[in-house]
Amino acid sequence: MKFRAVGIYDARTLGIPQMLILGLQHMFAMFGATILVPILVNSYFHGEGLSIQVTLFCAGFGTLLFHLLTKMKVPAFLGSSFAFLGGFSTVAELDTGIFASMSYGEKLPYACGGVVVAGALYLVLAMIIKVIGVKRVMRYLPPVVTGPIVICIGLSLAPSAISNASQNWPLALIALGTVIVFNIWGMGMFRIIPILMGIIISYTAALIMHAAGMTNGDGSTILNFAGAAGAPLIGVPDFFVCRFNITAILAMAPIAIASMMEHIGDMSAISATVEDNFIEDPGLHRSLLGDGLATMLSAFIGGPANTTYGENTSVLALSRVYDPRVIRLAAIYAIVLSFIPKMAELIGSLPSAIIGGISFILYGMISAVGIRNVVENKVDLTIPRNLIIVAVILVCGLGFSGGLTFTVAGTSITLTSLALAAIMGILLNAILPGNMYVWGETPEE
Image (cartoon, rainbow, N blue to C red; front, side, top):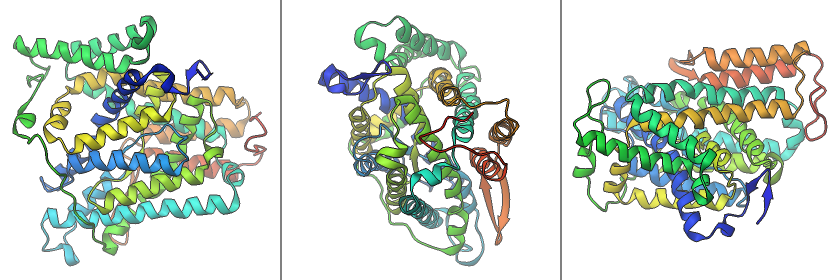
């Protein structure tokens, strides 16, 4: 068995049954956030938005495509991107030009067309990195920039964990406590599947509480099986082909700036977690290519943009099983579920409080990886330039909770807080004197 950093890099040594269970754990970790994107987009398009089944298919297939293009080396799952929600909302409310007489459902393909163009921008950046070399690009992305960005990725998700957990604190605490107990005191296989055990035990508690007539804090039912009851057992996802319009493209394409910066931050987080430099091998150009093509394919057939998922990076850190094969199993599960609407709806009935309780650890783990990145690379915060860069990144990443919205050619564009943090960090690192960092050679002292 191959170990580094007390981690398992070849899950085959655990046996097939354990690998299947580990893949299931990753599937549960991504599921809630992945299906939340089409749920939110549906609200923007008044029930005529993205399909959950198409979204699951695109997440699974996009992940497999990403792994193929990254030489099967990077343990990343590609789920639905939240960065493009503002763009979907903008396109849904367009009422000029060709959009004036369209229904919400007729506007949706144009929004997806804009996402296809956004994904193409990934390919442009990948080509630039391939031509000029990753070392020159990473000079503008040293640990003093990427570390705080990773910290912001985790902390920016913290309000979501609290919001979900507050629906039912007893249930959230059961989920959180179970994860802690199995991660610290679990024996054998149980120690590397704490997330899955947290879901199983807390869901069992939810069933008992629901049967006893208990409700959430706001009076709503703890479990709702209406969607599962009405869903067919087998069904083909509702694919459709995207369409293109310059107005929709202008609403969507600029968001790629944000999502590409988040991708680089996620790749830094995965590399730090696994202690393998994926930015160098298989290369940032390959991971950007995989993410971009996955996004383009997803949007072309009616799905959302894809992005590397911090939730699954957290599972890697918690389970210490770093084998990409396990992630590919989760991708296969997602594809299978996309053709079983009833099962997908049943999993979707998982109470948000359970997701919130587990997210306490998952989201905190992401920030912890960022802190570790700063510490291990010896970022000296007594140096004024470093202190300024970190300070501005943290304030931008955590302060602009709603992002920054501005208008271009009559179209409202929103840069997320993480995109702003990344842009400001990169600019300050390039402008301020004293940047002696050489990627792969010098610690930041």
